[in-house]
Structure formats: C-alpha cells, structure tokens
Image 1 (cartoon, rainbow, N blue to C red):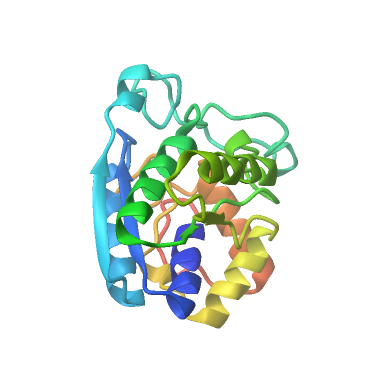
Image 2: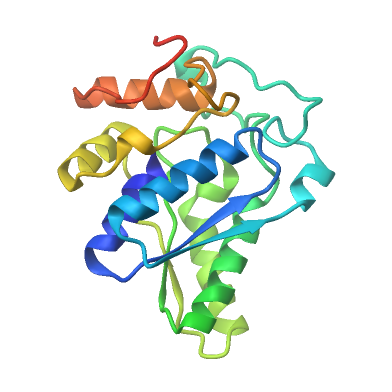
Length: 214
C-alpha cells in the first residue's frame, strides 16, 4: 500500500524507474504481480525485478524462514511496541544499495522509498535517522555524492497515507500488503490489520478482498 502511494507520488513529478525485490518472502510472486500492475498504471518507464537469496538463507524472519510462522496481530495498541518477528534483518539497506547503484548508472538524483515510521510495525529500518545516515553514506561512497533518499511518507499515519493515495488516484486495487497469503489477503497478520485500520480511519473502502476483514 505504502509503495503504491509512493510510486504514484514520484510519478507525478519524475520519470520513474522502479525496482522490485524478490528476497524469498512468502508472497514474492504476488508482490511482483502487484508491482508490475502498479508500474503499468502509474506510468513507470522501467521496472527492474531483482532477486536476493541471502535473506532466505540467513533466515531469522517470519517473512523468509518457513520455520517461523507469521503471527496474527495482537492487540492493536501493542503494534509497534517491539520489533516483530516479521522484521527482515537490515533489509532496507540492501534495497537502498541496489537502488543507489542503479541511480548512478541512470544519472538519477532521487531515490524514493515508501518507508513509514508512524502508526506502523516499528521496524528499525523505517526511522528517519536511518535514512539521514544512509544519505551521508551516499555522499561519501558514490562518484558524485549527490543522490538522495527521499521518504515522503515517513512521518504520516497510515490513514493519512490512504487519504493521500485517494487524492492522487493511487492504484490501491492492485496493491498487496498481506504477509502470508497470495490469493486472498488473510486479514489477520499485522500488515493486514494496519492496512484495514488505515482505510477505516480514513473513511475509505479497501478495494482488495480479505479472508477475514476485522
């Protein structure tokens, strides 16, 4: 959901070259299909699918390790209090490194990522300080040092992201957030619960179907 809004926002002002990462996540095939649909609808110039096998081999996350179950979300008040088992260790650093590498080749100066800190799962790689540090790394570790990571959604609540997406005409109907299912979203994992709550709080209707919907 956040990536779909971020892509729509980027496409409003930039020529967009998008990346999709297959990293052994349970819903990899469904997420790729969603990325392809979003890219087509918002007018992405090129979508580059990349595969990373290290997260599946490393394990340690319910998203990539079949031995760790994706839990149902607990009490909503507890979401974000502790880093959940669905956190993929240091994942976004790998994503950003690949994006910056491609940006150098393309001559692009801005890398968008739909990271969200507020009203979310509390992943450590979704904090503003993380991206501030990464921008310093880019400045010292790239040829020109002038590429910047842009996180336009990071300070918004999920309901605000839904409202922004509705305003922009973001393709929510082809987006995918579920951690565990690929045909019909489960409705009970933390990502589904956060998404459903966001649409409810925004006074909007989520256009995708759920096995359990609140």
